[in-house]
Image (cartoon, rainbow, N blue to C red):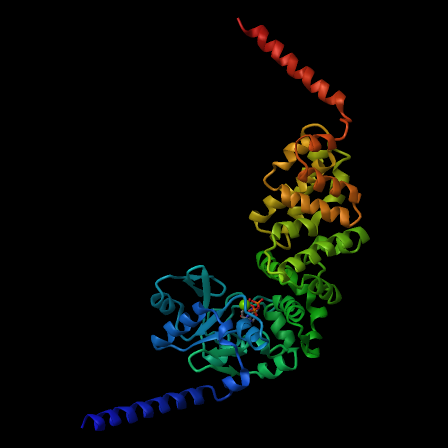
Length: 457
Ligand code: ATP
Ligand code: MG
């Protein structure tokens, strides 16, 4: 009896499962379903947080997939650096499922689901904005808002490259591929979905993404995807500076900054992007300095170390600061002139690429420290060693020496000075070449002391 009952339930469930699978198949009729034995994704490279997010959504009755760069990286057998999840649940529904989550964004509303120190970005499938005839684009076709929800299939169409439009369902260990992304990845090709010109017009940042992803992943930009870039480069002028900054930061910290910057130059994308970088890269000393800084950053990132964006941006703009400083020295003493130069460079840069304030403060500290490294007499070198940003300032000095801007010997002196102790350190100091100035100050101090003395009853 019990056996019969179980059999009945079992058969029913199997039938129900078949029905779901059928529904899946019809819904994804235009997608290729790539199974585990073909895609060979190493599940150990997938973050537990991403798996738990998909599981939570699926248990609540929604569809959920790991999507985008993470799937692409898994297929290339790289460890993804961040995981995005796509679902048919609305942001509010996602927010209700996960206690530790919050809805963010305006242009693109999504949910951050927090698991310990890891954050999973969950986005609701987006629909095709243009098909609705809605007016959320500006005159040049740039999309200003993108919050129209749609089906899984529609979501795939609005992603940028075929390699980024892959959906991995952890429960089934299957990849859904709507645009032949897997074949493109296998052929190491980066191909835009749809008409590349229209897609760049919708979002000019995609041009930067093409360059960055091709450099980072060793993918070749497919000719039709490549062709319109040079012609459309000017559209980047229209992109909000804070968005450009985020994209450029990703580019510089990708571990492939040198290749990326070289590619940007080849495509004429660097013009007006980092307005000052154009100028700097065209001077031999400036170019050498910037390339050394980028090489340094790439080496650190590829060795798994962190890299401070402030240091990098300070390096990228240093030769502009030097040039402006030279000009201001005609109207002000050296140190005030340096501060005027720093402020001018940051302000000009901010019109195109808004460097966050938290970085500009450190950039200025690194720059302001530089003239102090040239003072090797008296008490000053000791106080410089205690500066909270000494290490960054010193590394920056070494770059300046390596680029030929300063004698190598100066960097070596600071290395030895920081290592030395007690008397050996004091013995390294150079004779004070400004004794008169100091005497003058002493005299002033004495004078004021006398004045004070005079006032005391
Ligand atoms: P990375 O490895 O640097 O994170 P990524 O492709 O994952 O690269 P993200 O910015 O994390 O880049 O974006 C996640 C996914 O969102 C992309 O893979 C792509 O599917 C989609 N996406 C991101 N930016 C755009 C864009 N500008 N236009 C269309 N789709 C985009
Ligand atoms: Mg990503």
